[in-house]
Structure formats: C-alpha cells, structure tokens
Amino acid sequence: MEASSVVDVFGNVGMYSIVAVAVIVCVAAVTTGAGFTVLGCKFFDSCVRQPELMPDLQVKLFIIAGLVDAVSMIGVGVAMIFAFSNPVMASLVDFAKEYGFITAVAH
Image (cartoon, rainbow, N blue to C red; front, side, top):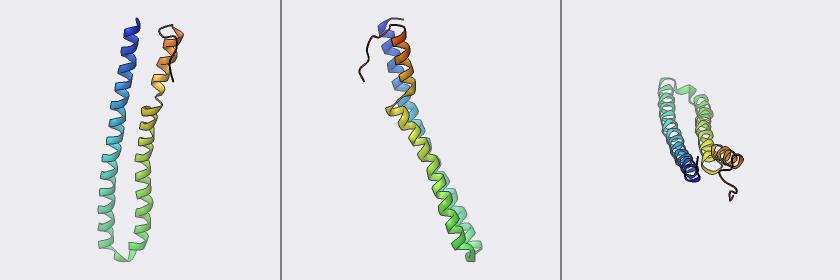
C-alpha cells in the first residue's frame, strides 16, 4: 500500500463519518418528532376520555417526554463523538504508524 492510497483511505473514512453523523442526527430528529406527535395525541385522547385524570396524565406526559428527548440526545452525543473524536480514524492512524505508512501525524 503506497502513501497516496493511505491518504485515500483516511479521506474515505472521514467522508463516511460525516455521512454517518448526518444520518444519526437526522434519524434522531425525525424519530423524536414522531414520538412527541404520538405522545401528544395519546395525551389529548386520554384527557378527553377522562378529564379528571388530567393532572396525573400530565405528570406522566412530561416524564415520558423527557425520556423520548434523552434517547435522541444520546444519539446526537454519539454522532458528535464520531464528528470530533473519531475512534475509527485513531485506529487507522495507529495502524499506519505501526506499518510505516506515515511517520508523524499532526494533532
């Protein structure tokens, strides 16, 4: 493997990482929106059927809304790890150093 192909591998990993980050963030946004839509519809439906339970249902709504939002934030956190501190890229750099494809990498 020559030096130009190593650079191509690094470029491809970087490009695929950007695509993966975009997909993770988009899927997190879409699923959170769908989750809040279903949650709100079920809440209003339950409140219309039994208005006396509305305070109890509202507490449960906010708890579940926090959990739905937390799941998407975990996905965004994982995406940021891949965007700014890519573990795949770090292992590629270690591999390239070990086999002499590169001598020094600027951090």
